[in-house]
Image (tube, helix red, strand yellow):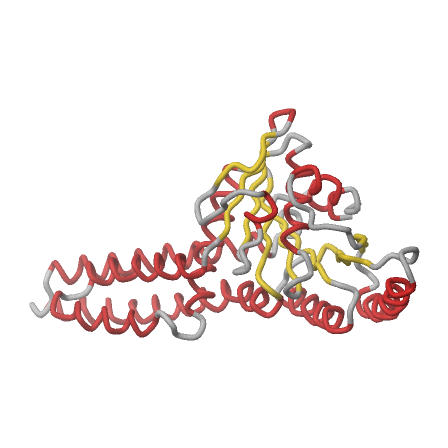
Length: 321
């Protein structure tokens, strides 16, 4: 299922509860697609930073090559660092405000941004900016972008931010419109200088570019021919309930939920304990099918070890349809 979905899309999001193996599944499907000759970028926004561990190399906030494959395909990877992303976001905002605000307000700008660093939603907003950039550049430079996202609650908030922040930016622009009209009247009376007019025009330009970036991300997220979201879960009570809730949230946001991957499924032939777990998992999967039976589902067996390295990830991909 998942390999077929990825083959027909430009952007694939994988999300779900923490600890269910999203990064492994994302890497496996990304490598499989690269082996078909596609240029693929795998992006992890999960703060656990497991991407580098799976590939046995350092993967950071800058794109690195993970694999070259026969037929001209290749796989690149990047881990979005929330702290670095937030710092870079605030630094860019600080530089812009310092340039646009009167010099005597520089200290006030610094105080506000220092307080904003740990404000609720700041990390999500900064990561959204980074995701928007990676999706935009990724779809320009690659055939497929696979995004391994943070746990479910964070993902739902992240995907709702383009609409929320787009509306916020629109509101700022409307206020700038009113200010511009008042400023034009003041200028006619000799109360407004050319420098102020240029500054206001640049503020409008900055806000407009931001709104357009969020709008483009929103368009990708809700384009069912381009983008799909696959939920990865374990066959346990809480992940199943959370998956049903997340699927409803995503559908409400207009995002295509393409399917489900049940990871680490216990075997029936490896002792009484695992056989009992398999039976208990089957009951939870009945609940899953009752809520989301219309979605295709891949089951990936519990593996003896972690799928580290290209060979292990290729083997993992054989369970993904």
